[in-house]
Length: 383
Ligand SMILES: NC(=O)c1ccc[n+]([C@@H]2O[C@H](COP(=O)([O-])OP(=O)(O)OC[C@H]3O[C@@H](n4cnc5c(N)ncnc54)[C@H](O)[C@@H]3O)[C@@H](O)[C@H]2O)c1
Image 1: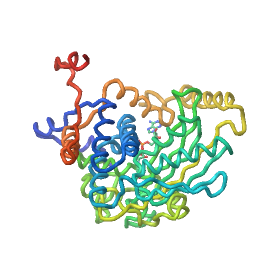
Image 2 (image 1 turned 90 degrees about the vertical axis):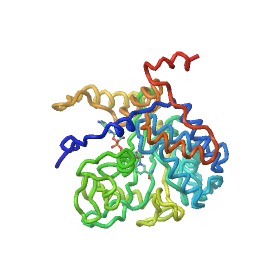
Image 3 (image 1 turned 90 degrees about the horizontal axis):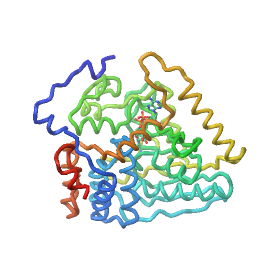
């Protein structure tokens, strides 16, 4: 299979200039996103929550699910298919099970309400399970996993999503690129276990990002509308993403649909609307479980066992040929976050322009870009 390196794409000078990265601090990205959200009718609390979720993705290097999602989210608000001001409702079904009705507000708001409820139940009963219906795209699942970790909890975070993958053996889009996420506290707060993965070879957001940036994609990510491998992101979006591990990836996507869609009363079986389709409500479903890590062993033992597992995986595994270091799930993203908190979040100029267009529409502040290194403005900006 050809790799992207085998398809060098020479770019004209103007395009190179266009793809120059502009850095923005997390605080400025947060206040910019909150401003746009409030300008589109989100109450301050919802605006803060959604902005936090998007900025968290940018900080972790999950650029596909960061503030660049704002234009598509706002298009849905303007089209009246997402209610920016609705408050999710909570129905307690058993002492350890509750249902959240997202009432078609932002997925991050419904998801955060679900994690809060699951954690509250787990603190009392050891486990809390929340099913979420009538929600929207909630962005990067790891943000919800981290919310549970901040409360010392293990978690499962599932969602379904719009059709992008075929069932194994088929060529029609039916299943979502629905991420499976879970987390557990580590030996210390610096080394938790965070798995957050789409069941496709690549998340579809990576194809949207490549299209936005004028880049090619690897040939093994997707098929075009005729079922042929393609490196053109636009053609890939007309076709299907490919599941990871063949039938196993397709089965994991069906699992997300059973737990998040069938179980909740939300849309399923290919009926969740695409987040870039502003013609109808998404009706996405989620499934969240919080678990107390010291249910069966004292917390100190749990943490010590996590330390042992981490050491066995990271320090005692012999790296394969060509591999510098073995990482724990979530560790690469944590390192990226530490670097981006110091150095800012890099955006492509065209992305900043699209974000500023959103600010102009509602008369809020544009993105504040950090002075370029060596521009002489850094000292002034620091004062
Ligand atoms: N809300 C939605 O509907 C939706 C849909 C699709 C994707 N997403 C989000 O898109 C994001 C991207 O998903 P993805 O599948 O492309 O992620 P990915 O392939 O970058 O990472 C998947 C997992 O593998 C781990 N990992 C990656 N490289 C590793 C290495 N070298 N060593 C050890 N562990 C490693 C990561 O920490 C992560 O837990 C996720 O945050 C997901 O939540 C959201």
